[in-house]
Each structure stands twice: as structure tokens, then as C-alpha cells.
Length: 408
Image 1 (cartoon, rainbow, N blue to C red):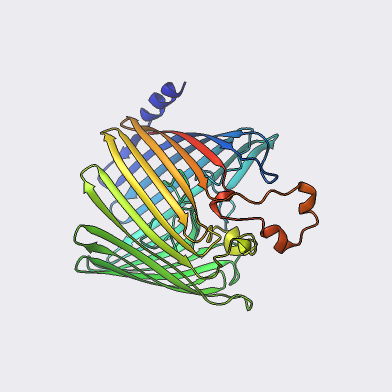
Image 2: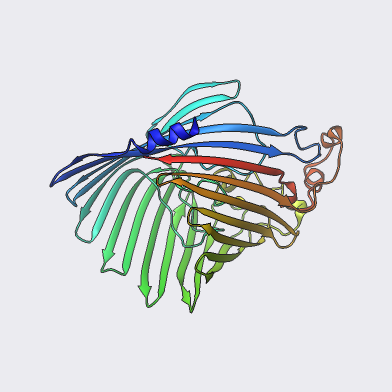
């Protein structure tokens, strides 16, 4: 069945129309996921392993008129079959984002079976000399780093998800200004939840190239917060360097200004191997495990801007080409003060020119939470309940994801 699906969808994509002035392309992809979770023994965990299936179909259309106008439309339909997982390993598909113009639907939601759809891209870009003007639903992000992304503030996208191909589109107006080949200024206004100052994101990001280094500056009004940042990417000999950092001046009186910063590097010790590493700090959180569960009601967690509970982190990834069509990868994200780590091995296989299969695992390593009885939790204070946590990634059960994707 899977092989038949791959052959059908890879044969479908086509250039519908091509002329001197107008070109229309239609394509898309079909992705299936099987998620499994294997909880450890604890009152916070379910008793048995669990699983869930997801099918995601995306139809894409792009219309280009000369070099003047580009129109893009993506519609994503997602089916979630009965089941549940307790893992933090997200597939990355079917993610919903706030909509200024409601373009989502849900046809069925009962007994764990969910069928829903969303117009995930719907934008028009006007290209004039030295500027691009884009209006509508579009992806919008800034920054240079991979593991930890302090500048991903408009529509945050967890970098630990399995499928990172499409970040959710946001309703925005964007202006890209170009000064030569090396300098660009991006101005954007995005709808994030409402039309007031807490529900909008206004951002300005300028970047230029000096020698082998890209330098970027960011200033934004992010849901009421004032945020300023910088980013860089370049090389020191054979080592590529990336970095970005922000300082946030919160809108809340009870939250102090805080810094988020990441610095990383990558190197290729051989033609088939890539090694990358990053360090990260977020000063609004404490390094004590007793405080990890406190403050998770912060709206920055609810919207995905923050996803780590401690203060100091490191990330390491090794990617290896095994054969021309098979690639292996191992990524580790560690809380260096617990200590604990999330280990994520994966193996991907290019089945055909337009189809691939991947298998990923997620394993939390660290001290598990204290053993407590369920009835005891009801009589604990908030601080006492939070204190049962001994490490961040020790909370995470083992999980696995099988992904099959076909493109047309």
C-alpha cells in the first residue's frame, strides 16, 4: 500500500501552464507518521505503551507572472487516528497558528479521530526594483542557529520536531529592501493572536555581509515585549560559526529583563560527516530542578517561544552519509546542570527521487522524578509538587517516530 501511494503521488506533480509571461506549478506531498511512546513506571506516566497515526496531505500551487508577481497557496489536510502519546517528540505537521482570517476547518473530531485542514500559505509578492512586498499567510522567522533559536519569535517552531520542512504560516505584511547583493532590511507586521499590542508582532531585521561574516540586527515589539537582538554566521578556517542572542524587556511588571543567547559551530571532518555543536543560556529560568515546573503557565511557553525549563544547555549532532541514499544522524540536547539529556538518533533512506523514509527515536536520560503516591499529589503545595522533579530530560519517556514522505 505504501509503495503504491509513493508511485501515485510522485507521478502527479506538474507544471500546469508555462508561457512567456505566466507560469503555474501544482505539486505537494503526502506524509504518514506512526508515533509510539514507552512510558517508565511512575504515577505521572500512563501504565502502557501507546501509539498514534498521522496522515498529512499538502497541496501546493505557485503562480508567477514575469518577475513581477508571485502568488503562493498551500492547503494542508491532517488526519489523526485514535491513540495517544506522552512523548515530547512532535511530528511538526498539523500545527495550528493564530489566524486573522479564519481559513481552517475541522470535519470530524470524536473518539480520538480528527480530520482537519488549514490554508497554510496564501500570499502574494510584488517584486519591484530593490524591494519585495509580500501580503498574506507566509512563514516568517529570523536568526542563524539550529538547536536553540532565540530569534524565532514571530511564529515559534520547536527545533526538536521530526519534520521541519514547513513552519506554520502567519498572517503578515512583509517588506524586504535590498541594497546591493550583501545588505537586506526586512520589516514585518504579523497577527499573533489579536489586533491589540499584546496580539501583534512588529519586527525589523537588517543584515549585511562583511568579508566571510553575515551580521544581523533585530528590533521588535513582540506581543507587548520589547526585544532586541543580533545574529552572525561565518567561518574560522574550516569551522563554521553561528550565533544569535536577544534581550527581552517584558511587558509584565513582575518579570525582569532577560537574555537568551546561542553560539555554535560546525565542521566536516570528512566528505561524508558533519559535526555541529551549540551552547545556550536563558536567564529568565533558574538552574534548580525544583523550579522547572513553576512558571510553565508563562504565555511564552504556551505559544512555543520557550520550550526548555532550565538555564544552561548544550547541543551536539553528528550526521553521517552511510550510502548515497542512506543517512544516519544522532543529536543530543543536554541540560548541563542536572545533568540530563535528550538523545535523538535517526536513520533516513531515500526510496526514490521524490520519496523518503525515516525512523527516529527519542530517549530521555537523567534522574527520574521522585516516587510518590497519586493521593499524595492532591495534598502537596505547588512548590512541593514541583520538587519531585530531579532532572529535566529525566521526565521524558522513550518514543519513536516512523515517517514516510512522497512528493509530487
